[in-house]
Image (cartoon, rainbow, N blue to C red; front, side):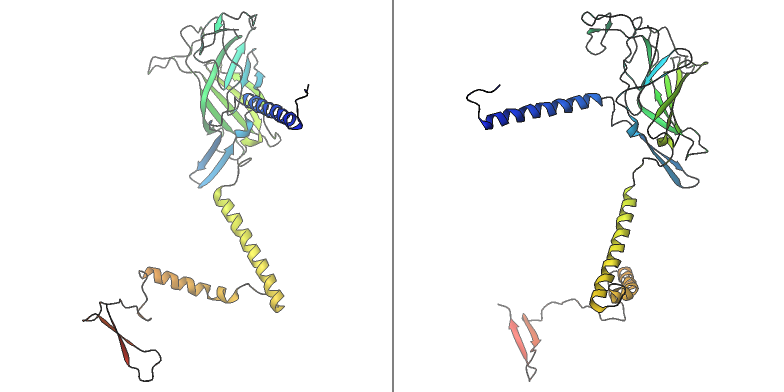
Length: 334
């Protein structure tokens, strides 16, 4: 409420403060809602066909969602994923410790252990070591930025694009180990492929299915349909194209405006600055010839002579410009 000491100015000041706090809260809330969308992720891919000297560009940056894309596979696993960002679903299984808690894709199965938020445990926050509620059994399938490649190299326009993400090898406490690399003796890392299928009927993105490899269960694939997997969709114009467009617009404006001004003056239609454009080719040739000669006049024209040293005695001789006798005046250095 207000008091007797309140003035219109103090009331307005308090209202402004309330509005500012509300705006700041909204800004913070928006930042939290989109915190999983990392702008540093590599969400643009350009494929260059060297044989045809053609580039195909793809931009998936608009597909990062504020909520995870969720899909179940045929054997009871649930997948939480995000494109060009980190999934919000965390992974803290009760029975073992994983290398990562978060990633671009998380696979879960089974039930989530009951937990009292007021007395969480036995899982721990990997950073703070504080006790928190455990999740269902899970694996983080991939982290970091992707490696992009065409799904169908014979069809870059509509064959789709795949993003490959590497995860971590299973920890010592993880009962689900990956195959061993015979060259190093260490486990292979988990790996997830996000297969983006070209579908012009899907204006944003639609998650379709998820698969865990049956012969190598540390390999996963999640399939999405989107128009952005079709070459050129959602890709902005390059600087060269913008320059060309602006130049063409400027030429059209010059021709139309110049012809209109010419007609207003002479009542005839014609090319603006016709005399200049008639001589333009010759002017260009003269400029090229002058540059090729080292910026010197050719033998057919007059030459420029260097100004020499003053004559002996320090006097310069010069003719009068209008005298009847043509006599010479002398200028002596002081």
